[in-house]
Image (tube, rainbow, N blue to C red; front, side):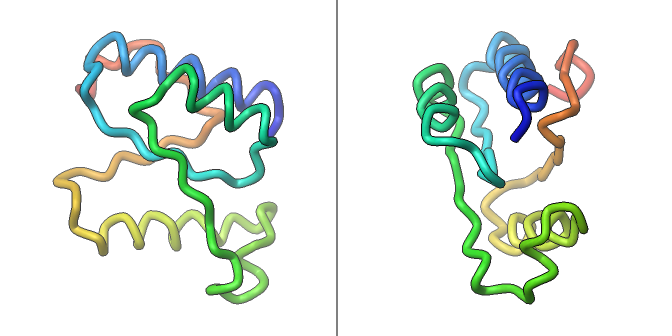
Length: 102
């Protein structure tokens, strides 16, 4: 993950936390360093961090430049039926006002 994407993710998590501190958020680790994972879990303990088992999928899914992993992850979240709503944001998308969707 680029530093810019990580900063965008952290900014978005902070905005969402200010609006609703009890909201459950899943973050999918597509290449965080151990230091970045530590920062994320220290600052946002309610954000659950999920690794992807790339071995379960065809090789092109693990190629992050192809973006085939997006529908796979979104589908897996919908298939679990644990949540009423699945709202997808890339780390590069920055939430500046969460009132529109919270």
